[in-house]
Length: 198
Ligand SMILES: N[C@@H](CCC(=O)N[C@@H](CS)C(=O)NCC(=O)O)C(=O)O
Image (cartoon, rainbow, N blue to C red; front, side, top):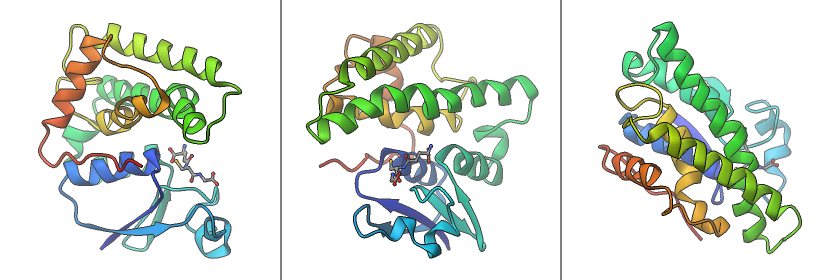
């Protein structure tokens, strides 16, 4: 069975957990620790040279980084829906994977990280980045239901998680009605699971 390596309240790992549930793929979760050094041990580094979660192992094949894992799962399971091969559609999905792995990590996820640790240095800068990405999503979603195509793709689990967890970074998304409506559409998808919270 596919193994999903997670740790603590990792939002990046939840992107993969959410995708596995939306795609109805059986998996077992291996809970790693951020504290005991196991993420940087030789065994785990053989699965992910970055020593981070998420990673998966499927049929003995290790894959790391949430975006790469979503690409793998999307293509393997009902690929034309989750990651279409039409050149323009595939490019639109990748656009949103880069938002999830870039803009969201520098803004929304950074704010959450700093607030959870009671740190203030860098918060204002991260908040500005978070607001910018929410404004960009709001503008994009004003006249469409889903981020990349006319149906849900792996862009949805990639981008949903840190927007959903924005409140943990003391960011209120409710001033972005198109984003809020999109979040509710994602929550209504069959198999949807909530992110773990403290
Ligand atoms: N771009 C990576 C980011 C992964 C990442 O930052 N993982 C964090 C948890 S959310 C982690 O494992 N941190 C531990 C470390 O870097 O040592 C992805 O999307 O998978």
